[in-house]
Length: 203
Image (cartoon, rainbow, N blue to C red; front, side):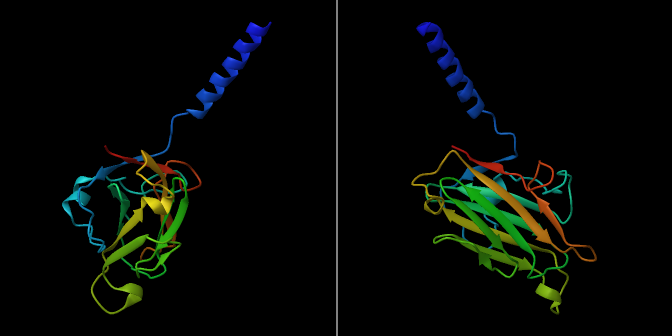
């Protein structure tokens, strides 16, 4: 009887372990390890930004299908910090447009950045830079083209002393395209809400 009970307990424990080890089913992005931190200027023109992988185009939060305006995310890291770069095509730049990022490790950080360079929700040490190709809010000038966000998140801002294997990230963009209704595009593979993806750190 005692042996049977021990076996039953063991099977329950193993069953619980298997449930906890369910493979992650969301999108993944491989972050490139860099020897030198990128210059935080919003340009994202260093060779490392070009070499690292991209999420590809963000899509509809309803079904993940491609949706304009084009938006994509890239990531870099070293022992001190994680850098996220977001490219946003935009034919009608508005200071009310925004990119949203939720990062979760030991701590969770929820950020919003506008084309005007306004960063909301940032804990100490987190910094962003924005470069705009065009003019905000219909100011006089040439045609609007795009804006780019570079975000620096030290590991300590996520409650970590060292880089983890991966960071959970949700990323989406609110935009008012020229001549169209406001819309949200997201790094999404799940219907109805911005999905959580994994930014995995290359070793």
